[in-house]
Image 1: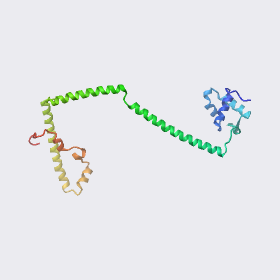
Image 2 (image 1 turned 30 degrees about the vertical axis):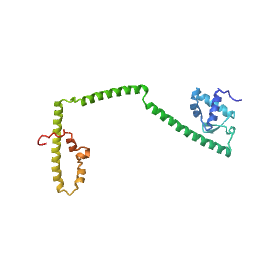
Image 3 (image 1 turned 120 degrees about the vertical axis):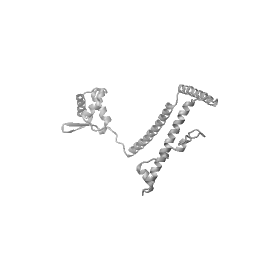
Image 4 (image 1 turned 90 degrees about the vertical axis):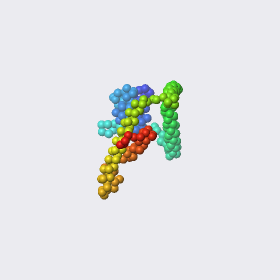
Length: 226
């Protein structure tokens, strides 16, 4: 007589048959916790099923190993096995296709999420219009000859620039004199010696004395000595 579908024996029997692998009592108890079955009840169910011949078991010392009865399963022949392998291969391909499709959809969703909403577009448009208006007002002032920098501020900046360029030129000349003296009678190649000492020229760091000097107002003479 088969156990009731909601009884402990029925639940345990169904699990053992589904797993179709060697199991001990603890394996079954851990897997069936969701049914609120105690280990003692599971042990009793396993023993009853084994005694009734509904499952198989073997004893290894004090431990019993339970296994579903193999004679209840249909063993496929070679042709059926080949069909199953082909079906499995087709399912694997379908799975890969589905994964690619999911990845494509996820990429589209991510792209859509990164786009601006209509509200954000309107806000951006307002900000850009304000920026354009400010730029147009500034351009209008420049075209009208309006002085945006006071003369004394301009002169202070120009004087500071003259001073910095003058110091740059003097230090550059001092370095050249010292470097020429060091390398004049040195057996080392000047380029290799420079790399060995870790020296960098202006051009090595993307600056140029002449270009900086060109920032000065065209046609305006530098103070004497500079």
